[in-house]
Amino acid sequence: MNISLYSKDQQGKGHFGNGEIVESKPIAFPHEDTAVKRVGPLFYWAWAKSLTTFEIPLHPHSGFEIVSYVLAGTVGHRDTLGNLQQVSTGGAQVMQTGSGAYHAEEMSTGTEMFQIWFEPHLSQAVKVPPTYNQHDHEEFPQEVIDQVQVKRIIGADAPVSLVTDSVMQDLHIPPSHSFTWTLPAGYSLAMVAVSGKGDLQPLADEAGTAVIGGDFAVVTTDQDGEIRFTADSAESLRLVVIQVPAEVDYPLYRK
Image (cartoon, rainbow, N blue to C red; front, side, top):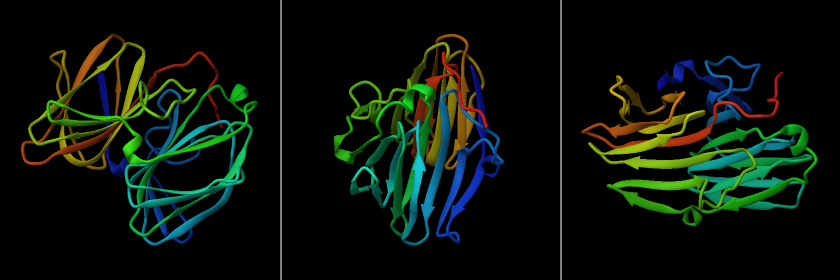
């Protein structure tokens, strides 16, 4: 099992308007300067923060499956499919952009969100009509496992179901507690430490890796394995974790 860690300084950067919205990009677009271009079919991951209320105007998308997950605040959405909605902390907007649609996003002052692009087989995806769905925080299954709060966003019994093979969870790990993730052979984990600090430790007598808020980590393995996420003794650790295949059986987008 291999763990690659990328600090905020190694991640891509971006902004909208005159800096009203600023972004760190754990996975940036292919033409942008960043340490990680993609993880399997996980194509793009941005952490956007709004310094003032600002709307990103209507712009087109097609093919990709786009999940906007609100960490704090409120995000407004409007599109050419006729949707006009808002979602707040813990909620998600999901666009399966298919044959194409335009949408606009408004972030209120102080809002933070992840926008994450998943890549299905694009030549097939663009033949399907686009859809938009929205889910509030309370719609996502949540449970406490050994005092760790586990929120399932994509995957089994979660309300978000994508064509792209993917699992996404939001983990709140209290101080000195741990959560173990089983990673099948042929899959990768990508995760952002939203806050706190802790350690990523493969359970195969390998060295652990320290993480702090803002870090991005990618875990790969060539055989079934387990990795333990442990929070520091003095503070909790929040991780948003995505599992995708390391490789897929369809061509991936290249620019």
